[in-house]
Length: 107
Image (tube, rainbow, N blue to C red; front, side, top):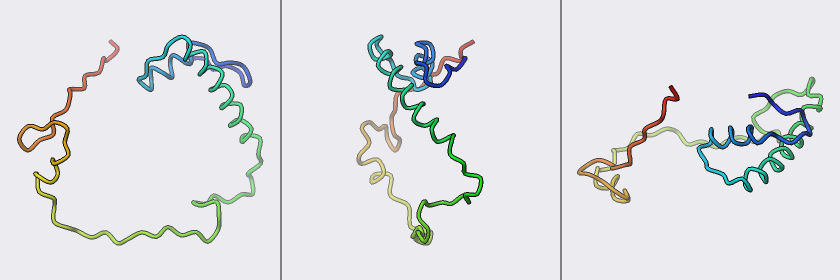
């Protein structure tokens, strides 16, 4: 897949490819609207590439002095199967029952 130059509308094929990767179906109207919206987002993000960050040290937070408060890991007894499955939409015995997921290998 070739990429559109910056500030040029994405192609319909590019939008369809992204939709396929996201596993969503789009109408022709949605594709056209997304072409414009995605192009606008890419243009906005590309502005960040022009910022010189040579002397900026990488950080985990944008504000200094911020610390994540984490609790210590503690072991607890496991939940019973009945509690675990109590909100399952479908179950079979002690198991969650889900629709099969079969992907096309593309071959």
